[in-house]
Length: 59
Image (tube, rainbow, N blue to C red):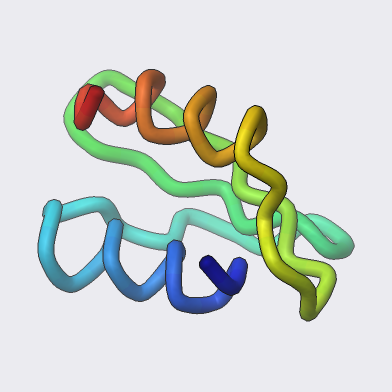
């Protein structure tokens, strides 16, 4: 999955909002949770993808 597609999925489908962009990382917030997603223009590797989805409460 591309990193930008992951951000779009979290924002549009899961209700996260982009709080700020710090370098190449998007900082997303939802209620009291914060999530950092690296955006380097590449596919997110499976381990990192699973960790981000788990932190977002999707796994």
